[in-house]
Length: 352
View: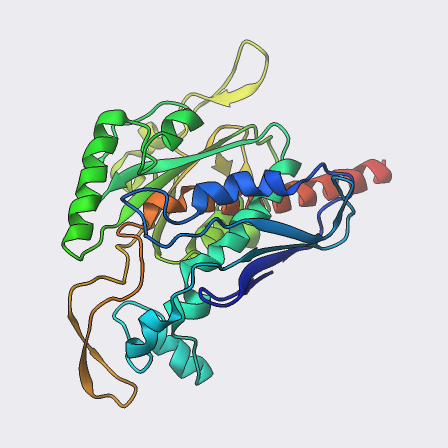
């Protein structure tokens, strides 16, 4: 569970179901939060937050207790006055209108609960999940921004190459072009969208449930729960619709270690909703940031025509900071799948 608003006192989460005895410290969580925090470079929001986390419960002497873990991050660089003029307006492509209609009252400060700042809680919880996923490597990076796309990358790019880029693109040449493109859009008061690619290795065969709780369906729901996400595809995705079955099918073979493998991975590491042991490979599409400085037409709460231009501090391209968020959500999906499979194996063992 997550709690808090963009310009409220704090953002946080409560993590339930984590086993006891897992080594966990604030530094484990802080490493991931620092990757997500604002104000990292010229291509991100100018909001300055250290995003220092505090563990309030569920950990004793550096190990989890098996009880609920509460983590909070205080908001220290709040500018709620930036949104005073917009309190009675509905910003285009924001949740202002739908929140007003659904709840009859909303927090206009930076979007309140609908702000992407809520994803602090996702990253904190994901850091805990990663500690429980031994042998699993989750690696995400920016594959494209607008029309600029990274050439196909085999395997997993290094974390160092990703984090060395201000836009989190591991290709240095493309990264430089992307960074300039984002800066240009920002200077023009506009924004850009992008695609994040995520690959996961070390997931054994058998995670995920068939039919309604397929592993890829859980990934899709997790990614679509993030602000600004407009697309998800796994494996060959939409490109697979332009292939013949004879070329799209992933043919089985036995490798030199006697393991069952597939010669291609158009399935993206999932068959019938269950992990196949191959690399899990999916993409997440993020729309251009909704808040822009250009003046736009809108309506106020009384349905009168109005003009609005963005105030506050916002990322010109949300995809650049969403990489650790995508990883965190993937980790949360996988830890749930692992725990279900572990429970099933335990029941089967007892039955024998």
